[in-house]
Length: 373
Image 1 (cartoon, one colour):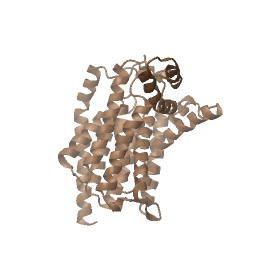
Image 2 (cartoon, one colour):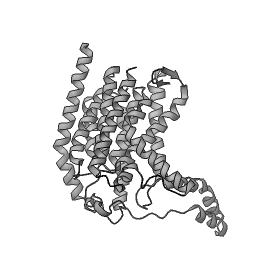
Image 3 (cartoon, rainbow, N blue to C red):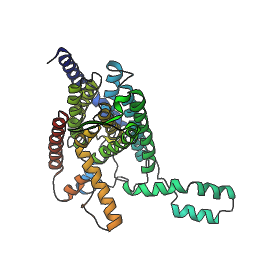
Image 4 (cartoon, rainbow, N blue to C red):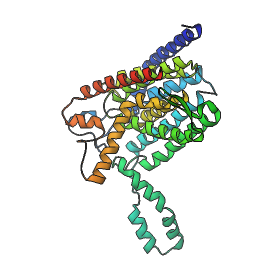
């Protein structure tokens, strides 16, 4: 092992240990804050709190702040690099801010009544004022887009809606694409292909980056439905990125990924059933976006298919279920995402989470093996 590699390994393990310790130290303060201001799950709007899950009412959400804040503070203080780490941390923060707004509005916000496409068309016909007719006509594409994507979201009328999330996530993805395409240079205008090197794709890398940032953030959010599930799978994913960063000699990204692993260890310790707090959108969206960005920044975008395996399986189960219900009129799964399907089949929460952890760890290992070829 070269002295540089050994130094990078020691440094990154130090970041991991420090992040774990820091997160453990301030976790009680976060828990107290969330309880004090009643940032908790409530049965009056959360349709998932049924049957055996009623006991989860009152559990604090936004526990993902433990990871987001820890990673942001440690990186800003000790691993800040304007060439590499500032955009991943900035986009993580932007995505986490979106998630935090959704979490808070879901709890404290009122129900939102959004006009349907049919309602707008009726208003165009009956409204007497020409400028209101113009306004409703102008709003038709936006309303149609909202109704089209709403089938993939929950039916609750609180918080930020699916179409609004997608627009803001698109902005986060566009920032990442700009950074990679303009700032990182021509070496990142390529797409790594397993066993085949790289192919130059030029500006086509931009839509690919935007897609993976948006898709991965939402995939992690969808998978965050059982105690410990998202946290444990994210540990494997970011550990895989840490190893790839070490192999590639990325002196900024290896400590960043190691820091995330350390903070996630502390979070998952408190999130294992019965959870002291849950991740919430603030953590799921922020860490999902960061997972995608860090893989893209290593020029190993397609490794996300392995490192994000469980998350992608979960979100694909939702897509398949929705399309099957609307196109074929029947369900493929008893309930989506996939972890709920197994719950209804009688699997315990602990059994589902543990098996998903093992599958995720194995597929990440396969991804690392592929990356070495």
